[in-house]
Image (cartoon, rainbow, N blue to C red; front, side, top):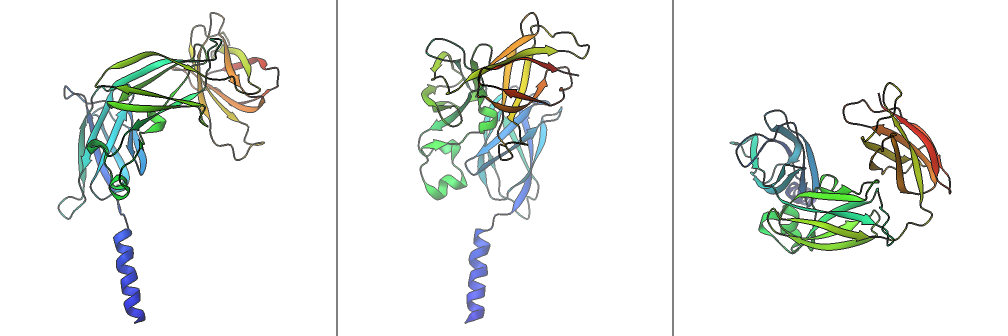
Length: 305
């Protein structure tokens, strides 16, 4: 009897195991040309994966489930595609999947306070609304039925409002209705529908002023020590992990410097931060520790190499 129970347990366990296998992925534009040297993300309701294509539009997704499933692929500025991945079999050990990207829709606008002041650093994440959809069925959806909000590759599809003007842009969106969740944790949400490659522009997102919010201002310098004027600056701002060891999240803040290389971030909560500056065409600067008091911080110098 004991052996029978062991055999039964092994049989049931084998039915629950999901094995992993690689996928050779090729991203193409509608004209058949490769989407070269481009970042992409693959979203499933059960998780996500991604990488960057080579000059031929090729990439490898590692350790993907070996069953058949549908997958959403998105590449910012290039588009999206829904592909069917075949099941691994004795006659098909290497799965090669070609995805022809569609342009998709775009939602853009501005995040601001009620008084019109721009708000930067807020994450906007699109969640596709609706029940079961043939294009977006997955193993998860088949097991658990209709899904009210379907996961997109959020870390790629998301947008962060800019600190200089509060602008945001969500692109490569499949047609449908979306809940745009603003803030992390959520502050508010918008419901917007798009069709095909349509664009919804001028969307105004009004949020309350965060409690205790203040500003951080400074100047961006190049390798020669001179100010970098009218330059797009990307700042990695995260809580100092020597004092906040469990604070793993961070948001890239984007701002354009003025004629003197100066910039301002708003809002930022008073605390102790690690800040790293990054500018296209230069090597990132060294990480520095900045303390932001209740009255705000000024005179911060960020230098790239």
